Image (cartoon, rainbow, N blue to C red; front, side):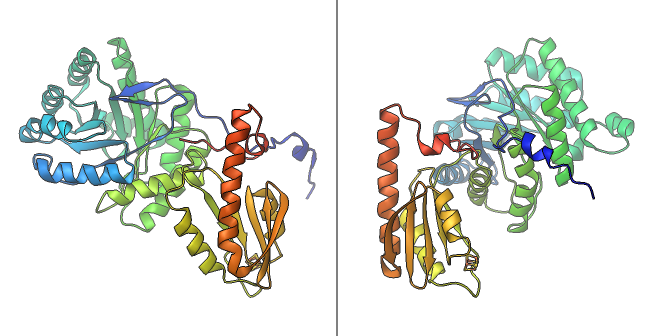
Length: 392
Ligand code: SF4
């Protein structure tokens, strides 16, 4: 095989792709799209009309970090409780409507912050127009939530099956109807339970539209497989720079959806909210009790929001290399270790001192970063040719 290595000279050194440029759409007090952090959302599983249960679930979601919440509104009694729910929660409230456009009109009489409709099942263009006009009058944003499982029959027939082009064409039809009404406060989702379909649908959409995207793999099923499946579908999209708000659809209690969403954002470095711990899987070369050290470090780093990379490897094979590349790192061997800060050796420690010493170095690193920023200096983190960490 002839290998043309000139390719390596022209390949970008920085693998990070910029965010897909999207407009900003306000949802309550939050702004979605543009350069704003990718917002994490979820949906309640209670009967919405059961106000106590719905509010209690939303409070638990809020505590976990949920930034927007959606409730289903299938019946007039659900719509009737939206005001009460809204008054008792601290995050924007989204009403989720399927099939009955009258429920959408009814829900919009209440102080919701956004409406989500599924264009494939809302009953046609005229009914959609009525919802758009009311949302516009109320100054409220709308998610056009295309779902491969409920595409317009005509589009399924045109393309043969609910494929990415059919999904994007469905979204664009409704977007253009809304635009003709002078309405632009849209957020778009193109969901499927099929991972390749999700990835390609969002990629196709991003070439054609600049309304912010709500991303997710729908009906991912039961964790832990559902989390892996969601990560498999969302990582390529996020790494392409697509996605302005995210929902992980897990069977059962919605709170784990929030943890999964933040983990996926952290791993793809699209929204980093805590230190990144790099640890080796261990093998027969292991020279320290790595599991114990990592468990203690994790516990003591809990609650920190610093976007710092900390590398803790069990022996000298990759230890020094990873430690130099991380912000703080330790290369261990035979019950001892060498600690690096910003690529330089700063101290030698024995195993019993490692956790305390690493945490002291993290503190020093944080202080240095704050001082460098105050002086207007470019920090090592900003200068490195690695993926830029998006904080927030
Ligand atoms: Fe094994 Fe060393 Fe690699 Fe850890 S860093 S997996 S101990 S070779």
